[in-house]
Image (cartoon, rainbow, N blue to C red; front, side, top):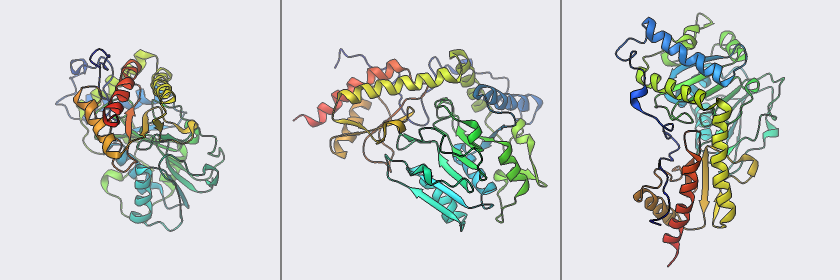
Length: 372
């Protein structure tokens, strides 16, 4: 394998994900460093991050973008704690993060009227069972299973409940029907390869209406509070963050957004991810010992690409170790709660040429651990 090309960038981690091609810390703006996030400059830069996000994603009129603490997890939990309880809730779970939201709602919030629709890794719940009169909590793409919902057709346009969507490994990589979604959350460190610790919370007008018309019966920590005096705290969505953000992380995020613009916008970013999946799909189709964890081809994710291998869990670990030792692929072991296998990040910041260079090395590693 000494004569076989290696990926130029061996970083295939599913979070934090690979930095964008050509990334250089020296390109980040530094005038905001050492300045208060509540200064006129700090607020202007934070608001720029919100408005650029809305413009790039093409969000519908009235949708608000805010920067919140604690990554995607913080954004999701802020929505759950602030909005649930007004109606019955349906929760979909088919991997570890969705299961975590089940725990939050059932064991922490202790809501009475909850229907949990849960399946094993590789499968989706029956989406036809979702009740449009109830609130809905789900992940668009199961990062630890590589299983996504195929589309938004199953979400009713005339729904009465809110749809709360954890889309952290989908935003900027998969087509999302914004009008079907009332709360959308993600973190910079996924598709855009940004830095961790901050989340993005997107609210539809229907979500704002819920916040202003419903007060949950439980106390809310300060970092979860989205209203004051029964009205939305609009400042959160105009650059006045709840707590102190890292302005270096904000500068890093703006750099990533500029890169998306440079490559042709969100559709170009999506196409890069689609190209990465095609590389993996072609290799899987040509090798009968390698399989997608997702059982239905329509649900295979192009970002967190999860694969199973016809060998023992011990051999899978050896394969992952070999690829790391040879500087071919780093951090590609399956998530700890998922079935044994490998997980390749195929988001926009990964070059399809690097994915193509990786695949023969996976075959080599398989031979190394299975051929006696």
